[in-house]
Image (cartoon, rainbow, N blue to C red; front, side, top):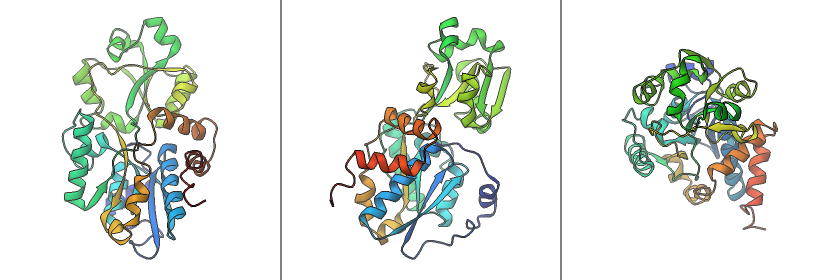
Length: 304
C-alpha cells in the first residue's frame, strides 16, 4: 500500500542507519533490483515488473520483498538498495517522502510527485497503473442495513458503541491519519483497536469488529460482502498507484522506459481487487497471478 505495511525490524534498522539491505550492494552489474511492500498488491505488481523486464531484455531481476513501508521503500531507493519500487501512492508520498500538504485533486497530486521526485532525487514517478488504493471505512452488510449506513458521517450517532479496527500506523499519521479524521468529521471512536492491516477483513467478517479501515483495492471487501462507506467529506486524498524508478537505471538501460510503460493505465481498481483476492483469498502465489495477467492480456505476444 500502499502505502502502509508492517515495519519489520531489519527494514526499520535500514531507515535508521541508512545502511544497505543485507546481501545487496549498490546498483551495478546486469541485474535490476525491484522493491515491494509486504502486501499482496505490491508483490503482484513487482512480479509483473520483473517478468516484463526479463521477457524483453537480458537483464536479471532481483526481488527485494517485504519492505516495511513507503518510507522504507523510499530510503532503499535513495541508498541504491533497490532500483524500482513497484507500488507507490500519490497521497502517501505527498505526506510522507515529500512532507507536503495533502492535495485532493488526483491529477494535481500526480503532477506534484512526478515533478518533486525528478528535482529532488532524480527519480521518475511513472503515470498510474490505473488503479487507486485508498482507505475506506468499512462495515458488514448487516450493520449497514441495521443502521442505514451509506456514508462515513452516518457513523457519528453510533460511534461510542462501535469497535473500530485499524492499522496502527494510520492512527499516528499526520494529515490523513486519525487526528485529521477527527478534525474533518467532528467525532471519534472511543473503542479503537490497532491491528495488522491484513486482519481487519476477517475481524469484520467474524463480528469481532464493527467498523474497520480497509484498503479499497482489497479483494476481500467484495468476497466477504462488506460495505464501503462513502467518504462524504472527502477526507482522504487520492492514492493513485505507480512505480518509481531511479533515473540512473533508466539512463543505463533506456529500453526500460518503454517496457515499464506497458503497464501504465492497464489495471482498474476492480481488476486489482480481483488479483488481490487471488492472493489473499485463495492463497495463490503473486508470481503466478502476475504471469496469468500478463499472458491473458497478450504482454508476451509480440515475440511469439
